[in-house]
Image (cartoon, rainbow, N blue to C red; front, side, top):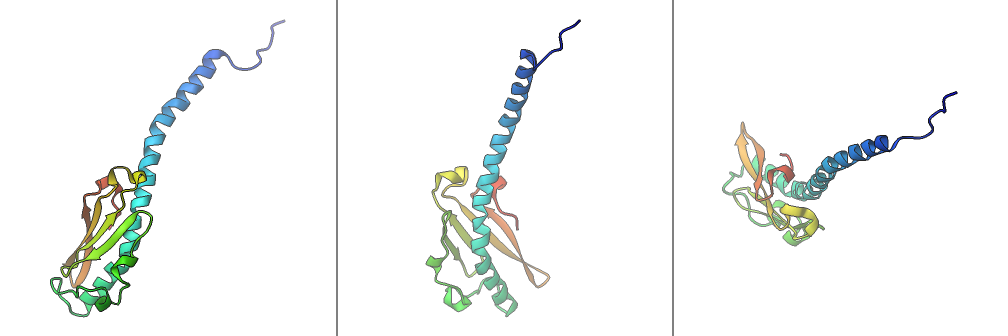
Length: 143
């Protein structure tokens, strides 16, 4: 009678380990990019109130070059209150340009200390926001 094989051979185990290694080599950088992008997304959430206030001012008749320049005139909180773990400040200009400066936190990778810019464009009487800035494109929030 033949003996029945019990367990796995060494080559089978080595193939499984190699496959796991290849998958990990692909997954770890993708996961790091994903976590950095989620941290940079605080720029979108913290700038949301400012962008909405600029939208309201625009709809009330202010032109993009004459948006009121103080937070109080747009019914916003003082400029220093727009901070978080990954965002240093949120500011805006009379042109409607919203600037979000990220902290120097090392966990932001190549986005550390850079800025995200939200630039308004008037399209058919409404504002459309374009996302620009020094943050690498793969980490920038969507419009």
